[in-house]
Amino acid sequence: MSEEQEFVPRIIYFMCSWCGSGGAETAAAHHLRYPENVVPSRVNCTGALPPVHILRTLIEGADGVVISGCHPGDCHYEDGNFRARRRVALVKNLLDTLGLEPERVWFRYVAHGEGRRFVDTAAAFNDHIKRLGPNPLKTRSDT
Amino acid sequence: MNAKGAVLPVGEGFAPAVIEWLKEALNREIFEAVLIPVETPAEDSYAYLLIQNPAILDRASPLPPVMPVQGGKAIGRLTMRGTLNKRVAAVVRPCEARAAIELTKLKQAHLTNLFLITLDCAGVLPLSDYLEDPATAGARFAEAVTQGDRSPMRPSCQICHRFSLASAPGVDLHIGTLGIDEGSAVIVPGSLKGERILEQMGVSEDDERARPVAEMLERWTTQVAEVTEAQIERRRQAHAELQEAVAGADRLLETFSTCINCHNCQRACPVCYCRQCYFESTALKLPPDNYLARATAKGALRFAPDTLLFHLGRASHMALSCVSCGACEDACPMDIPVGQVFSLLADRAQEALGYVAGRNVDDPLPLVAYEMEELHGVEQPYVEIYREQEVQDA
Image (cartoon, rainbow over all chains, first blue to last red; front, side, top):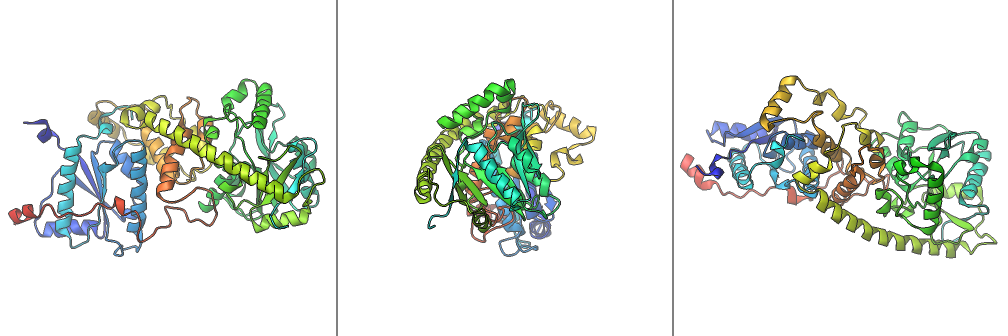
């Protein structure tokens, strides 16, 4: 077995409780599968996901983080996804400045009805992280 | 008066002139109190005093050689719980004024009835350097200021490009000295409040010993622009070198490896605005099995844990409000270049979101405001590459 196949990334999928997890429900209703190493985690709104939690996830063992909220204009709280976009931009900027691989964070809108898109995002991100390799921070004991 | 501003006659030195001006304002009840750094009785440090008795103003020092407490923090402590009911003048450095403005936006300070008076700043000495021998350090500082030499100053001050009025054009009054002959200074209003104060004080438009105010203002503006440009270049270079030194997991962890988790940087930071710090809350004090699980995953776990999370997380909280004052670095007992790393992170993050911390009270905070069409670069485009898979699954 080659090393590439052995590496199973640990991925946390933050989704908002309206569209993101709705997309997961739709995927379930259609019996669509996504990689089992992608761990879904529901937050009330992506705009309410503190940047610290994204950083904490990356430092404490995740290889990548995906965040999915409603499409622009569809947010249950009107502007949560726009705020989330700024927060994700901030986190990516911090990671980029410090050379900590901002590409380990993905932000993609998924609507309630887009089960396929949810499953695709999980699968595509999984492949993307597999190509990137393990997150160097997760094995460091001196964090 | 076409150019706004007035001449401040400086007879026996700059500081006494500023103090004399403040005293007159206090006596005439234009201000009812003054918040200004004053040398401690032991003559080994400086502290902000809220002064109501004009006699105590004599010991004040508008530009002390060190910054043991960031003025923005002092203003925050003064006005966090409500607005002032007396007119208070706060004589602070530009970075301190910017911190106060930032705190106001974060609802941790109130500027009502507060008059921010800033001065052209050449930086301050590192606290540790100063404490070795306060007397000679004071003289060394004065010498460096007259020479315009920033090399003995703190690293953050050496690369500071926001040392004058232009960095926070909304402060009420600014006292400019750069490019102006010794023997005078200019007082420039930044706000309507400041203009009214100047009118009330009736400071002479022309001082017999000095040039006409318009010419002085022009010389000051030119000199400030010149120094700013040189400092921006210095800052760019220093940041490029620093990024080289800290980027990447290995080098970053090396940078913070001496951290003793004292959280002094957070306590000294003027714009660390949370009333309860997340990193000192119970959210990060977990049951033992959590730590054991993490040790299992990583092979070992450093204690106290979450050092990197503290620094990165703190950056995510305050990078957009960071005024690059360097108070964190002064407070670090382990000489970690936190101030430099944070100013680098802050510059990049503020640039990305089109914001300058503390520049203006009316600029909305970047994490509160948003535009419909912006930052499309962070949105991951959806390419339907997995269609074939779908067909197979079906």
